Length: 128
Image (cartoon, rainbow, N blue to C red):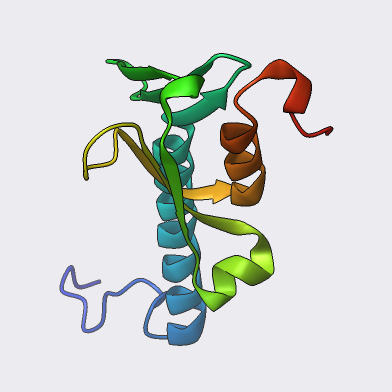
């Protein structure tokens, strides 16, 4: 018996099923991308109380911006058609000057943020 083989291969995985390979590749990359996207969005938070507005950014290292609700001069909400359909928008809060002190993208229910900022005191806050 000869030690020289005329043919020595393993069954082909990718070449035998190229569409399955592409589907698995896209799904694995998609799952990783969604996980990274979720972590990045969990790192941002906008909170409004009766007196203050707080913007937090970061998971391990935190950046916090806090301004008094009574000092908010104007609120700018920017929404595309798709954002209007799904009820999200970009929110910018101005207190003094032309540069927004707080700016955050893709916030749910941006009109609620505008209503709370417009009320400016506990008695006028809209009901949930």
